[in-house]
Length: 172
Image 1: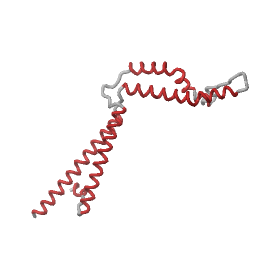
Image 2 (image 1 turned 60 degrees about the vertical axis):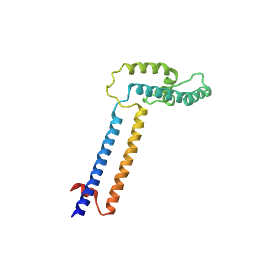
Image 3 (image 1 turned 120 degrees about the vertical axis):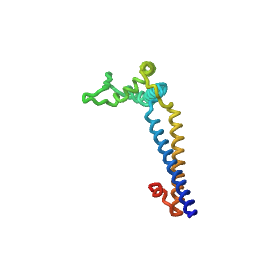
Image 4 (image 1 turned 90 degrees about the horizontal axis):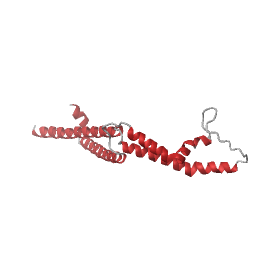
C-alpha cells in the first residue's frame, strides 16, 4: 500500500506541475493579447505617422517623380494633360502618385500639422510599452511559451511511457 501511496502522490505532484504550467501559459497568452490591445504611447504614434510620411515621400522621390518627369519630356503636345481624378471617380496613373507627391512636396508642413494635432489630442492614461518595448516583451513571452509547451509535452510523453495519462489523471 505504501508504494501505491507514493505513486499516487508522485502522479498528483506531476499533475499539479502540469496545471501550474498551463496556468502560467494562459497568463502569458493573456499578457501577449493585452500588449496588442493597449494603446501606444503618444510619442510612438507621432513617430509612426512621421515615418509613414517620410517613406511615402521617398517612394515618390525615387520612383514616381522620375517617371512623371520622363512622361512630361516625351509628350509632343504643348499642352500637358494630367488628370488626377477620372470621371468614374478612379485615380489615373498620375492620380495614384498624387498622395506621394503631397508628402514629397509638402511633407514637412504635413508632419508639423499632424504632430501638433496628435499632441493636442487627449490620450488614454494607461498606455502600453513603446513599439520597441512591445516587440521585445512579445518575443520574451513567445520564448517562455515555447519553453513551457515543450516542458508540458515532455511531461506528458514521459508519463505515457510509464502508463500514466496525466490528462485523464487531472480529470479525476
